[in-house]
Length: 259
Image 1: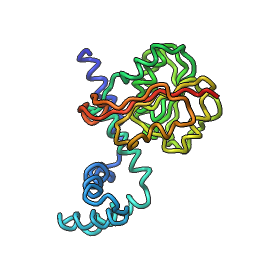
Image 2: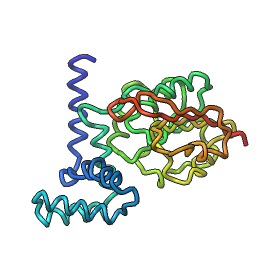
Image 3: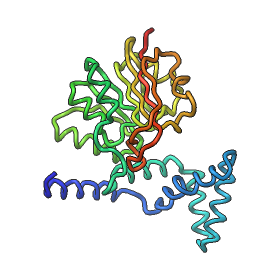
């Protein structure tokens, strides 16, 4: 990438990131550091108890009571807005901690498929959607991170590609019936009843999924797509698309809708 292109990209990221809420700065640490530690110490801990422990830790750190109540109120009453802001920060950060190239498993599987209509489930900034569009697929995608979806559209437009995108959460996306020849889950999981997603596959349509093994639990992915014909399933050690590209246990699946 040239210096001019790098400067333009940095300007784009800064301009998008400027829409982030300073009042939400605390949330990534609560969600990704404090909460996992609390659950590791007590796997059956309730959400209410996590909040009580969080408040106690803030008081121990001399955080003013008015700020503690503000944070707790946001977590209780505005969790969706906090999640959107956090993911926008992830996707627009100056040094992304995820793979910005197309997913390797998708590239391997797409090579043997005739282009049709694809859905990129939780598409992020569009690395996989753009790859599929370049292969000739008609690509639809959604993500609750609106800044990430804007990046995807801007990148696609620069390449002369068209993406059909929506900045919505899973529950608000219109999957429809028998729309897609391919549905991609790249380091994402269905957060709606999986029947809604499967119903949007055309007969002969394919699900391609890769995620960390701890997303789904033992054989969880097999059970999830039991209504389809599973043609490939593997659990291997591989470089993650997330987690700073560390090696971890990865689960991969290909499943076909036969009826």
